[in-house]
Length: 241
Image (cartoon, rainbow, N blue to C red; front, side):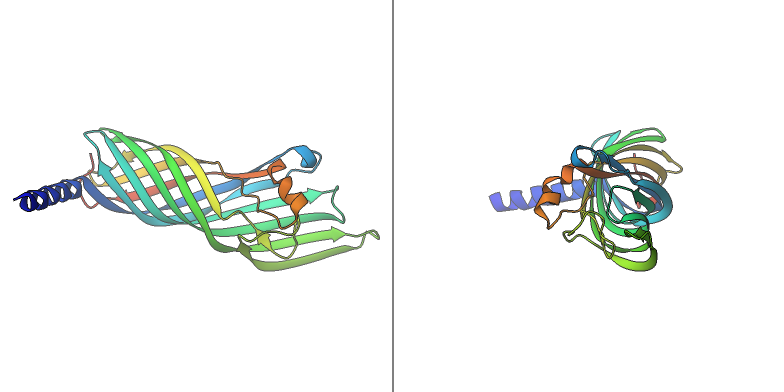
């Protein structure tokens, strides 16, 4: 008897959960850049500049309804992040100018709390992104003691490995895990189709870890965090309140 009651309760719970869960494919554009903050031993260094580039994202969104207006929205996305950084520093030896055109591939899991008022949607949540790889087109001009300039251009793999120097000229390094907060909103075009916008504040220092103990101990003095926004279109297989 108890076993039958447990089975019936489990089936009822599963049906209830399934009835409140809707799934949507999601496609959109991304626009990210990096924001650097130098302090401590790097306070006299030239800060790198970063210019955002338009790229894309796609994946799936899951809407679990908690009531008439609130829902939880976990997502699983592939995100291409593109930007250009320029670093020019007279304090380095040799003096150099480095320009990186960066294309990074992230597997991202946003978890949002959604509030829906008729057709208007308000979103807030956290995002966990893991760097899967990418490429960097790098242009470096260096000057030695004779002021001889050397210019190279190469395509290199993105890496989450430890860096041996502050500005390596042969490999692009980045902290592979990126945690961010996001706020945004949306509009219900139909009961199933929605247009959404999110602004993203990176919390994680994207500066890599270093194999050199001195550089590693000063890592928090060179903080690089991501900023950006996404605009996406979703189509839920089921009506969303």
